[in-house]
Amino acid sequence: MLLFANFYRFTLSGIVLAALFAAMSHAEAASLESCVSGLKAQAIKAGVRSEVANQMLSGVKYDEKVIRFSTSQPEYKTQIWDYMAFLVDAQRIKDGKALLKKHKSTLSSVEKRYGVDRHVVLAVWGIESDYGQFRGDFYTPHALANLVCAGGRRTKYFRGELIKTLQIASRGDVPIKSFQGSWAGAFGQTQFMPTTYTRLAVDFDGDGHKDLVNSIPDALASTANFLKDAGWRNSRPWGYEVKLPKGYNGPTGRKKRSALSTWSKRGLTHVDGKRLSGKLEAGLILPAGRSGPAFLVTRNFDALRSYNASQSYGLAIALLSELVSDGKPFITPWPTNDPGLSRAQRLHLQKLLNKAGFHVGEPDGKVGPATRKGIKQAEAHHGLPVTGRPGYSVYLKVGGQ
Image 1: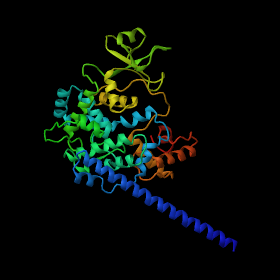
Image 2: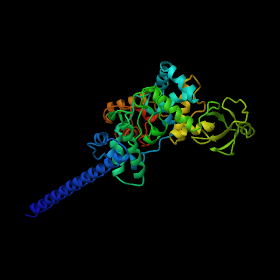
Image 3: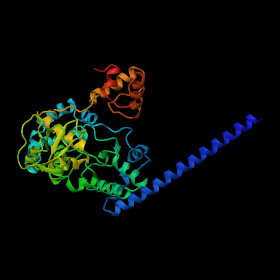
C-alpha cells in the first residue's frame, strides 16, 4: 500500500506539474499573441500598410534561441587568433579576389562616388555575409517581435528596429520574405540594422528600390556610404603594423593619437624596421598584449570599428582588405602555441571528432554547444586542458594536419 500510495502521489504531482506547465505555456502564448497584435497596430499607425504588418507578423512564436542569444554570454571568450583564423581564411581571400574582378565596374563606380577604398567595401561584404552566401538564421521581424515582447531594458530600441523593418517592406524596397538575418534584426548582404538601412541605404542600380538583399550594387554602395558617413577618407590608410622598442611603456589606445613623427621619437618603427614620419595622427593598439602584433591606427580604423564596435572586427576588415588586394599579412605572430582554425579546418575537426566517437552532430563548420562538448571530451581523452575551444592542438590529436 505504501508503494502504491507513493506512486499515486508522485503520479498525481506529475499530472499537476504537467497541467501547470501547460497552463503557463498557454498563458505565454496568449501574452505573445497579445503583444504582437499591439505591435501590428503600432506599425500601421506608423505608416506601414496593414497587409504588410499582418503578413510579416503572422505566426510569430516564442523563439528560445533569440532570447538566449540576447541574454547569454559566449561559453568562452574568443581569442583574437581564433577570430582572425576563422574570418580571414584562405577561402575568404580567394573568393574576395574573384569577386573583385567580377564586380570591378561596380566597385570602381562605388569608390569614385563615395571615396571609400573598394577593397575595404569588399572586405565588409566578405566578413558580414561571406559575400552574400550566409545572411543569418532568423526571419528578422519574428526575431525582433520576440525581443520586444520579452521585455527588458532594450525593448524600446528593438521596437523601433521592428517598425523600421516593416516600413522598409511597406515601401517595397525589400520583398517581405527576404528579411533573413541575425537574431538582433540586421539583414542584407552587408547586414544593416533597419534604422541604419533607413538612414544610409542607397539605390545604386537605379531600379527605384534600396534593396541590400537582392542587389549587390545597392549593398556595396550602401556600405561605402556608411563608411563615408563614419569618417572614412581615402587620403589616409587604416593604419600600420609597427614594432615596439624593447621595454616600451608609453601611451596606448586608439584615441590617444599622436603624429607618426612623434611615435618615431618614442622608438616605434614600421614592422619592417623603416622609420615612421609625417603628421598623420594615429593611436597605438595592442590587441593581444605587448608580446603580440602592434598597430598604429588612424580615424579610418574608427570608421571600420563603427560598423561593429569591436577592435578584432576592425582588424579583420583591415587584414582582409589588404589580402584581397595582394597586400602583406600581419608579420608578428600571435602570442600562442595553439593557433586558431580556419573554417575548413573546423569542418574537418567536426568530422574527425565524429569518427573518433566524440559525436558533435552533422558537420557544418560552426562551433556550437555540441561541438564544444565533443572538443572537451576529446581534450580530456588526450590529456589536454579541457576548454571546448577549436584549437590546433586538439585538431592534431584527433588526426588533423
